[in-house]
Every structure is written in structure tokens, then in C-alpha cells.
Image 1 (tube, rainbow, N blue to C red):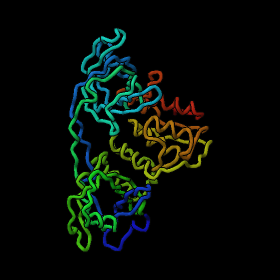
Image 2: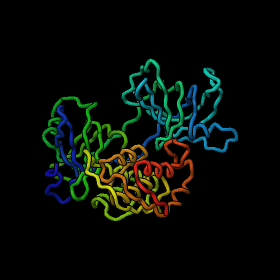
Image 3: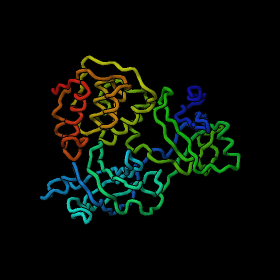
Image 4: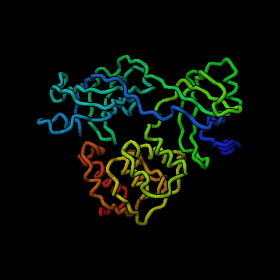
Length: 387
């Protein structure tokens, strides 16, 4: 695609349109000067009241049910995995979950029914049929276990389709496949196209999927033979509004100076981690040994920890996991560095100060996220020095 990343105009190409054909080959469909409507804060789903029936609670959920009411009842986003006998077969996300009440379970006095308020995001592959003997596993952000339950009443109820928001492709030079769509009668509703965001050097910075239902094409405000094209469904999981500022930094090229992520809040740091993950394909050769220094001055949240960790192990702008499971996978090799090595964690006390409800661990032994990451490193053969 490199040949399409430049054109002879007064303004740069910032986006490529790419679509996979039936054989999985990526085909060039066009290039654009810009896209309007890509950055958007996620619209939360409507609030619902659900019952986690027959729970054996663990971690923050168990703490929220403890007498005295000292623990937070705000669980954040909760993942519900529906397991058959061997593996998870369906996933649901309970957004911004809050414990409303609880009572002894009628099925088993040793268990508890937990009433929660949340928004419900459905797994796209949901078939509506449960396995013969399902098991419901609950986990919070950062993969911390919340326990299990016999079922979730209200989980599979009917829901309205979420709203869709369009994208405007500004200054688009359409290739023949896209021109054929604009000329022909074929209906493309439900098909998808990729938007590849480019940095100033023509490197792919981010990939986004959008619907290919075109509702308008007209001469571009930029003039010439260019078109402005409206895609009815701009796609899900768009970069947040704060990502605009993060992208400005990355547009200059992959960052080379440390701690450029530090001025951003938690959401901005998550967007930074998204950009580090772009372009990962296949396994990379690993090196081990040596001493790495982690600058802990700005590790005030989970994404900040992973930004600092990647910089310590691989350098600025590099990827080495963005949450607990991904970090564990990176430690197993194929991402550029693998234990044994020594990690000197400077100003480690700052990560220790993060409130417990903002940093949750994997659920093993009630550790904080910081403590669990340290133990995970040590289990894989790294020596961690807290300075």
C-alpha cells in the first residue's frame, strides 16, 4: 500500500480505504485527505437491572457484599463469560456495573443472588442458545476474577439496536472498486471497509472498520476531481475525543522520547497503548538478560503502568501488553524481549499509592495490580528491584 500513501496535491494523504476480498487479500479502494466523525466518545448502553443468580463471589464483588459497607459497590465493567464444559463460548460486557442489593440464593443457601445495575453490551456471535450445563464466570477490568454464578437473569432479553453514526470521507480519490460501488446498483449494506490512518511518513498508524453503506457522494469541498463520501455506519469502537491529541503526537512518527504519554489521563493513555499495538504481526525475535530501568514517576493508573513498562523493556512507542493477560503473553516470548532480565522500578511507591478501586489485580491472592505484575515478572524469571 506504500505507493498509495502519497499523491501530487497540496495536502497529504491521511487515510487509505482498504477492503478484504473473498480470498482474504487486501485491496486498495481509495485514499482521502481526511475523515470527519472518526473520533467519538462511546455512547453508553441504556441502564438495566440484572440479577446474578447463585453467586460464589470473589475479589471486589465479595468485598462489596461484606458487612459494614466499607468496600466500593462500583465494579466498573464486568465481563460475563458463558462456559461449556471446556471453554468460554459467549461473552457479554456489563458496563459501569454497580451492586444494588443482595440476598441469599434460593437455589443454595451457601450462594447469594446479587442485583446489579449496568448497561449491557451483547456479544455479536450470540446465538440465543445456552450450552446444556453452562457456567457463568465473572471478571473485572484487568482480568481480576469476581467469582461465578449459576445464571444472569435478564441478560438475554430483547434490546434495541444501538444507534449508528456516519463518517464523512473528505477529499477522497476513489479507486476502481469504489467507483464501481458508486456507479452500480449493488447493495453493500452489512459489508465492511477498513480505514487506515497514516502518519506523516506514510506509516499505518491505526486501522478502523466502518460499514460500506454509502448514502452520499458529491464533489469535494477540496475541489478538483475529489469526492466527499458519506458512510452511513461509521463503525464501533472509534477512537475517543481525547485520541485527537494523542494522534497529533504520533502523526510526527513513532515517538522516540520517553514519557510523552505521561501528560494524558487514563483514557488518553489507553489510546496511546492502542497506537503501540498497530502493525503487530507474527512473532519477533527476543533478547534476554541485561538491566532495564522503569521510570515510575507517572505510573498512577493501569495504562500508565503498561506505557512505562513497554518503554523500560523496548523503548518509546513500543508494545508490550496493555492489560494483564496481554502482558503475560508478552512475557512468554515473541514480542522483542523475554526474561531472564533485571528490572529496576524507580519510584515504585507511586504505583503502590494508586487507590485499590482504580487498580485491580488478576484475582490471585488479593494482590493489587502493581503487586500482581511484580509477581508475574518474577514467576517468568525476571529480577525486580523496587527503588
